[in-house]
Length: 321
Image (tube, rainbow, N blue to C red; front, top):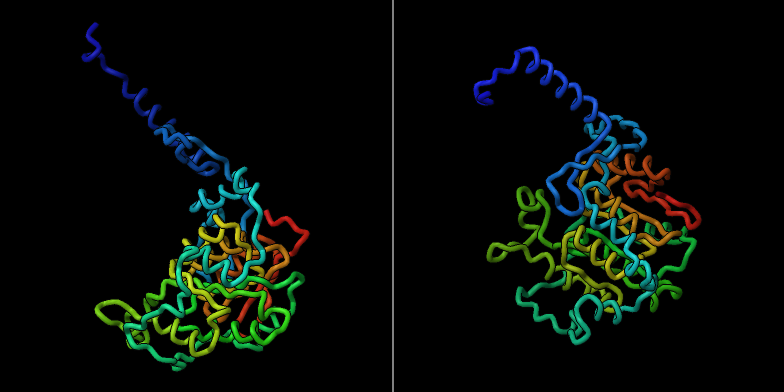
């Protein structure tokens, strides 16, 4: 028999199509296809068992099953790596030790060796920050563990950085034992590029915010307390994770898009030392508030709010997985 000339009955074709559609509708409701670790083209189906989170009023719709752990799997897999687990965690580090760790042991002090090509001087004109000295001091006093490392995500020209740094310097228990690490690209936000371009000091097509930040830290005499790490927040989180640097306070003031803030919350919550506090600005910004409430629901914590500052505590004796 010539197989090419063999005709399949129409009813069999229709039945096959209907079966295929029904099968895929049933599986797509309960499973998610992903590639196997060997990068095979064969699909592996993983059941979704997460509880549904409530949708908060005024927030954009979102998939309640999707979390940052689904998008950044390699980041969270490090937490299960035996070699990483065996390494000693770092909760306390001096200014000079962190300087060497970030920039290299043979690198000169970044403030003393800075040539200031753009001729930057102290500038206090930027008015926006809710992180006052009083607010930071109030939150830090709620810590149940010693304060050695503070990480700020989103520093701009250093207004909040200066406030935090001066509180650290003025407290005898923290002055010589606590470092503030500021993580920022210093390239500006969408609003800066489109609406507030003079604030970012563009020269030769590139912002000079980083140079202004250094000038402000020098003027504020915080060159033994504050260190900058010029990188995106996601890369900054990876660097801290690889080094096993666990801050006691993390201040988020970078992402302001719904979903973007959620990613930073999940990544930096993992880095927070148990007993520490995760803090953020712009509670009144609806996108930030939506992501915070979604995250807080997921880990079972209640946000505290001081005017426009929010914070959540990571209890020592609790498993948040």
